[in-house]
Image (cartoon, rainbow, N blue to C red):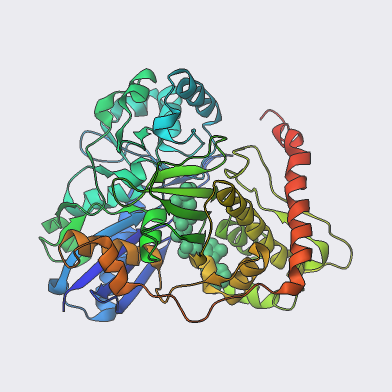
Length: 499
Ligand SMILES: Nc1ncnc2c1ncn2[C@@H]1O[C@H](COP(=O)(O)OP(=O)(O)O)[C@@H](O)[C@H]1O
Ligand SMILES: O=C(CO)[C@@H](O)[C@H](O)COP(=O)(O)O
């Protein structure tokens, strides 16, 4: 039977998955990497490091499964969104990639947003600019690193670089391109009037296609580095949020995803170009022309727990932390964590917002801080869920996904704080599975993405009910959580000397 490969270039690791066309997983391999923070507010990763990690991971996957590369009929890619990879005339990265969590481009964001309003283009972008979006980062390079800017011949988003290394073809696709802000999200093409008004050459933006189209074939060099067969078909793939939606079977309206990756999102698919007129959420292209994803984008989800684990507690692993706080009561005995370590998008769109613990007394111990971080992350997701409902999008089912769905405590916390049952799918590594389904559609294993989802994705029978005893308490703390930001917003703006 044919096999499909899905690769997800995440923010904390790259994962590769092999499955058969019915969704039976043959194996998953992973390699971790860090975010580089060379200066305050910067967040960068090396595209070359992504590539060596990806090639190693694919080789490891073949070694561990013993699968024959000749059986792989299609490969699809999923990737962290928004980031900017700059390529020179030889296709070599000009500088490290500026990724989604970078905050250096606040001035450029303000200017782009002014321009969007003046040119009346917000109906096309369906978003306002944020720091870490590729267009904001590119304008920052233009204004601050002219020698680098002069060397750029094309720009792509993170997973597009991996596709280029696999196939030799430089290109983008609509779901991720719509997260760059240089894109007409309504019309699914680059937004040249905006690009040109910012003094950026339109030629830097390569051709932009659809996720399930075949982009090319594995080159001999890539085959040598990865163990894949030369000539294997590679589809364009898509943004991780889109591929995750496919891997959760969310290819039509009615289900909402709550994702805890490095960032966090509450997202739904809509069949109309819906966006929040107050710009508290994001709307991006979904898998097919005529479909969009509307999402609450929280920047500090798994990232906040990872920060606590690595920078504060120097703990060995996530499971150990989760067990440490398993006995702490709902509400962490009054400790609240505001998770805005790198600012926040939904609902505040404020790169200056900052994190903190509040409400501590002599009684509190490490385990309360851990639980408060889990809860703080979910309060932020609840902000997104409430905005989603404000847009008229009702959640028939909330499906949890991402690394945060690996532990029952975080799943129960979501059910309790949302006040809704939370489901998971039987799928492991949903973004990889989504990418594999899209690959299967591109190479003709499935007649449609929907048919692929039908064959591969099923909900787990086990789900998490909200505990009625915790509802009032969590409503109260979520109210405090919102107030803490609102009452400190002005202080955050002037937090740092010489900021
Ligand atoms: N066993 C676990 N228990 C709780 N949280 C976990 C566990 N494993 C991973 N996580 C959380 O998931 C995050 C990584 O999620 P993932 O979806 O793999 O991220 P990305 O796609 O950004 O690389 C970690 O930072 C951590 O907060
Ligand atoms: O900003 C966003 C989505 O809008 C980010 O969440 C990136 O798409 C990275 O995803 P993860 O690596 O955290 O899953």
